Image (tube, rainbow, N blue to C red; front, side, top):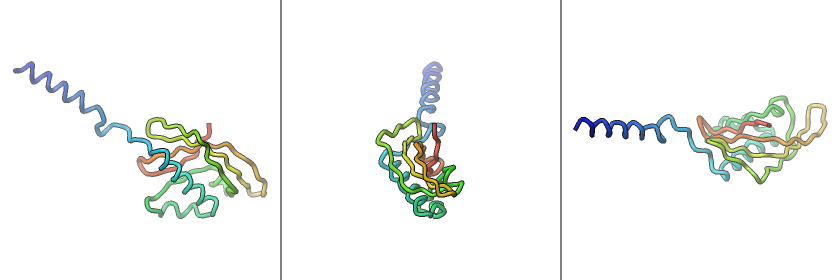
Length: 125
């Protein structure tokens, strides 16, 4: 009886580590990741990034060029996103116009996540 209780306890404890509270959240589906990416980049292009924080649901957007005041002229999402753990990495070609009105093309990568909250974060290699 004691041995059976010990084995049952070990099995229950081992199972608690699989998908329990400490498990990483799933990555957004690629279609959802693309939709969030387009929402963020369209807001940047329209000069309305501030509105993302009050959207439903709120969307966090981080891009160093946008933060530096550059304008987004156009963008083209790549067709080869990669999902790793809870992150979807989406390649994007950006056409950016800086404060001196100089245009440049940038190959960027955005990480799209759901947890702890929806976010689109630039993370170039």
